[in-house]
Image (cartoon, rainbow, N blue to C red):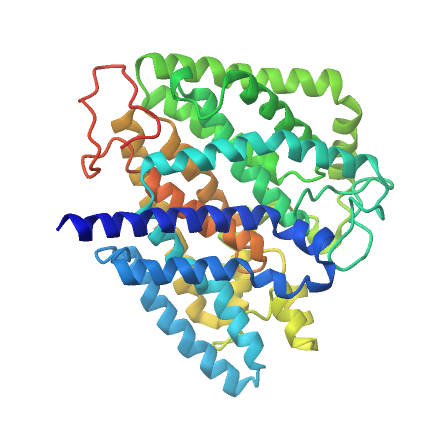
Length: 458
């Protein structure tokens, strides 16, 4: 019936708008907590959950919950197992109920969001994400530059706790942008890099922003990469460029391939040239900080966390407690809620490596969560390769490049904003794999050899 179809489409569009609101809150949540309502910094952590509740309600009410997704079914089985484990832990380890709930939230709350977003977003719905993320890079660079240039205890560098910002080098503050801390800011930069790279690889008619705006945003991104004081976004940039190079060599065709190869080289060489000529002092400071490696347990960044997350947890198996130390106890929020020695000890031992901390918190059944993440990334990578080849479009694999690293190496069960970015962008990556698919209602003519699918249409 046309009326029912229109109603369902209206609900789909509402879910898209609610998802964009969730994304906006991810970016602005820290600004609200630091500058606008500092007295409400703790309750504001959960304001994003209002949008998530509304998304789940609309999805269940109007049939947007994916019914045939094996991965979602596997995730729901995993959720049931983890709830049972958490209940046993609460009784045996006498964990506070608020710690158990917070831990389950970090592991499971946003897992269905990825699949609902993947179900509801059409390729054209990705364009606002690309457009406004890319356009936000220049004003964010101005803010970050202001934080870099002012003292660690200035208003711009205010933290949610009221303390001075973390140190970059000497008395220079580590930039946090509009976020409550460095992890959120690094998630913003790392997720923006594939969007910028994909925008440069697209034909001019398909780009989400005009050329001059893309140039300005790219320079803004470069400035933030140099002054943020962390290697994580640099390594994400390297991986996304590597994926882009592989796409142009083996998957893309015709004009898209030629433009992609040229623009990747210009982007990389131009960035190095600008950094060397105009940001020399900042590059030296970044090199100095990396050489010092003086942050104790935090000194290992993405490359160390990647190797540690992939291999370190195996060394824990012989001495692993079957029940674990308590779900969520190794996260910042969980340890804060527990306010006990167990939380502090677990964070000290398992802080660096995501998979090690999962096993430490959940015990042997944590392997289910680890292998589930690997299953997600492997499945999504296969789909992204097929979508990139089919549509002659770099977007699917570029979005996958962020999801791959964040799920393999980053501490998504520890930090709220990082958790939100991980599951949201996984959903956007699922949606991007529809580009050029026959499943979409909006069909396009069969591609001629070397032609480009219109970037943000199915």
